Image (tube, rainbow, N blue to C red; front, side):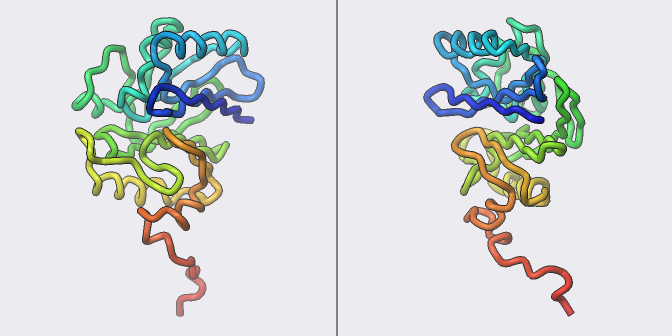
Length: 211
């Protein structure tokens, strides 16, 4: 059983997720946005109280509000930080990273992830899919009712739309998405209601109805 703990950090109200399997003491941290000082102290204290030991950090992208706690976690626990190498074309990274490839599978802390590269919000944006749990960590690629902004350095609107349409919308409708900001949603809800995904905002007739 997948356990997902959710924290909101920094002035940008970024979502940090702590994932673990069942009663395991091993945890995977997705997009640690805890700023130095009180937020990091509180977060590390919570991990200790819960007796959870991080085994990896997964970054969906390298905007500062999503990685502000990555170096501190790596320094404290000696864990790898996974990130797409393309992020280094835009961002100065002050910690060691482990590169990712599209379709790569990661087995971490008893959890099984598939890497889906989704450039657009940033050049090296990725989503992390847990097929056994039907959960998708989307970072700032896809939100409830909207998509990531592309007006920042390295952003590209057309790339983002292609990423979402080609690589995300084809997942099962009951896959739950956990975005980098705001509340969770499902693939089905975004197909139907997200105004940026207009091709999906029509009733599905089904192949059998075509003569």
